[in-house]
Length: 206
Ligand code: ADP
Ligand code: AMP
Image (cartoon, rainbow, N blue to C red):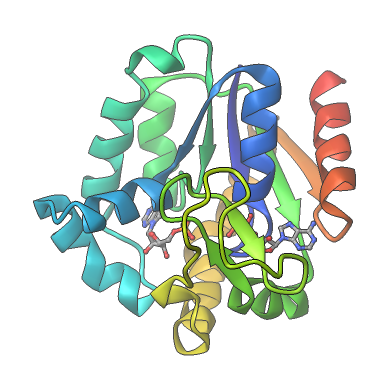
């Protein structure tokens, strides 16, 4: 199965992707996690991406498309994959369409007024990419691997606003793009985490 998770920053794409990828035994591909790993490893790609990420802008299509093209050819994608945070522009969606056929695009809807609180309270594991929220996770270490959690620089309030503007302008048009192609499954993301997972699983089973 090949899936895309769409939705604004903070919608819960990463949280749900981890669960759904495990359930269907497919690879979880988060372009944001891949870019953060490039930055940590001080690669050329990481250096190119950092200034865009820090400003809440999108990394250029040419960089991202090549990165995803290579990634989906890896062995762990043979059974399928779940793209989390890609595509984010029509050009990326067109390029992906040339590479492979997607089964479903899951659009996780959350009212915009909830997003800032979700993003500003997010704490991330640097090792496994798990996301927590300060209101529901008091410890400052990851439950899964024990690493010390951190706050992403681009989760600070100054950058969050621009990320939401960029989402509306460049990524939200993909909802209609995939609807027109008969791929869209819309899920209410403004429910408890387990309920969102149930809604996705039910939608995919239809
Ligand atoms: P995205 O990958 O779409 O940017 P995340 O999965 O990282 O979003 O979730 C953003 C924040 O919201 C995290 O702190 C996460 O723990 C929290 N979160 C995710 N899903 C829910 C939910 N259904 N209800 C409340 N908080 C959530
Ligand atoms: P995310 O972890 O999905 O919130 O992504 C963090 C940041 O990485 C974004 O704000 C962008 O700067 C960059 N990024 C991640 N995925 C993409 C993509 N598909 N296209 C362009 N930039 C991306």
